[in-house]
Image 1 (tube, rainbow, N blue to C red):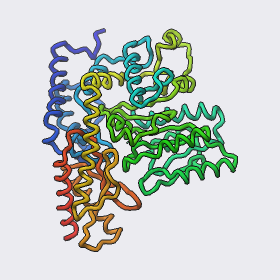
Image 2 (tube, rainbow, N blue to C red):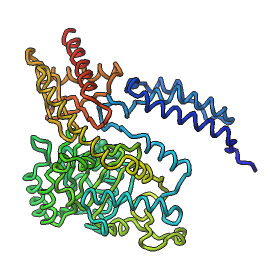
Image 3 (spheres, rainbow, N blue to C red):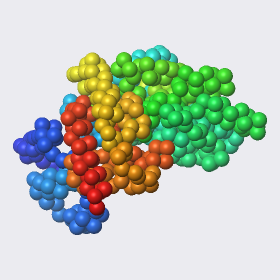
Image 4 (cartoon, rainbow, N blue to C red):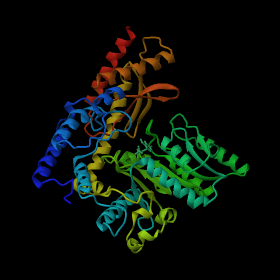
Length: 475
Ligand SMILES: Cc1ncc(COP(=O)(O)O)c(C=O)c1O
């Protein structure tokens, strides 16, 4: 039988070039587009909701339909005015690398099936181990789909190494600013609510060391088994870094697993300021970093580093008979033994190609620029009479709110006002700018990790916010 999916070389070339042209054009003119798109389920259903066709359509028609309906109905995470959540600035080399990896459909699960893919995962992992001052020989790691899966993988290993089979009495500690993926992972792993200690943060949004120590002491007195502390290095809300050195000492004294969730902030270690902010990160047993955030990679690539790679293989290795032939020797790593997935896409390729092409120097430059940009934004806000800074520039994140000094507004009114400002900005589609809540206040948050974002973009958006604020106050 002739494969029903076969296409001629000419038609594949024409089709492929069309897509490449679209992507290149997207990179070239991103700044001229609006970053925000909004559509209801009803509107989307009206366009897309159809039964799967029994007979196919011409490939060009399907592509045209996609370009007209799918792409314009997606927010542009690479846009310089995409300020919210954690933007995805990405880069073109990695985008093409992903296309290459998918084009050749390279299986990145076991050594035997693609030695080069496994080797590049080992090599780039070694680069990361060195960057974070982890031991290269004993240490190791694995690429995951993102930070959530890296945290889940880390906590699975932590539970297995520290608690073995019985974890009914084990207690895990994290701050009220830790990312929700950690709580999700803890639940997936079968811990009960009573086994989680959510420790309050201080005025800098860092875990309170005194309260953490008190909770551990209390739990020990009650016969519980403290087993793991999750520190955050770059919280999603404010970019704050928990006191890593102090937590490392507690973990050492109490024999606890030290996990650092640096999914957001980890990359900052490549900058001078970030290096200082992240002192102590090298003491972690396990460390999540997310290349698809501040290492400028396209989705999906997360990463888990561990001090001892045998912790991963001891936790995840299974030896089914159908994988016997591809087991290989110990140095030829089968990454299916290090984590949850067996079939895995070739994530290391984009990281490898972009670092080889641009050099670490470019990453250092971009990250240092981002940190400085947030500081400049803070300076600008502090010198404007209508703005109040709620959390200072911290690893390229800043939180603030519109708070005119010459008008008397209650906390509630300020919350409503700032919420409405963000709604109006989004409605205008000019910038993606949403709120978060800090110290019970609704605040506007900017995450400035896009190297194409300039102070001009920020000032334009703030001006727009001021315009909307006046409009709201005058109605
Ligand atoms: C600190 C932190 N940890 C974990 C995650 C989850 O990462 P992902 O969305 O890649 O699963 C995020 C996402 O923003 C984060 O900021």
